[in-house]
Image: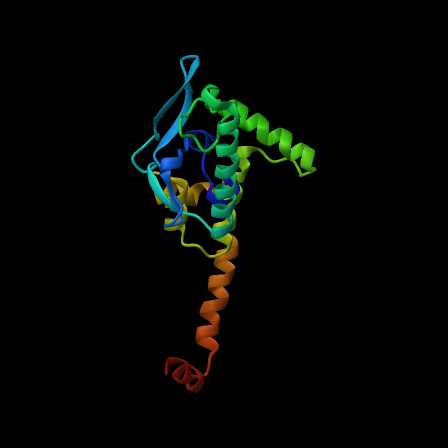
Length: 188
């Protein structure tokens, strides 16, 4: 989910099932679990821009459906001991995950899978970089990441822009170098 959405770890830890719209294929990022004052609380997202509607790809939706099915089974097995906080990501008994625990779980599973070292937050950066390299408009990337301005997105991910510059140069040159008769034919 982190790799295909770029959600922050607090947003992942705070994602609720009521915020997952399976038929529409999207989620609402409305709350986060944040550390502060020695405890973890469920709070609205950091800023107005952080609260956002995000489309999901079909594979991510399928994985969430299977995850939901397994969570319902765990809930039935736990019976009254299950603490229902409506969280997508929680402990087996329904208790909320501490954001640090989410990070630790990701690190442990990555190591066990033999994957190269990457932090959970690194998945957010990878998501943004891959979208920009794939030609996704920076405004869409900004909205998906919940950045307050497009300037933050462009400043943070400027390393992905050179490839876009090269592609733009090639496309512009192709338009100029195309003979007039080919251009007229393309416009029909």
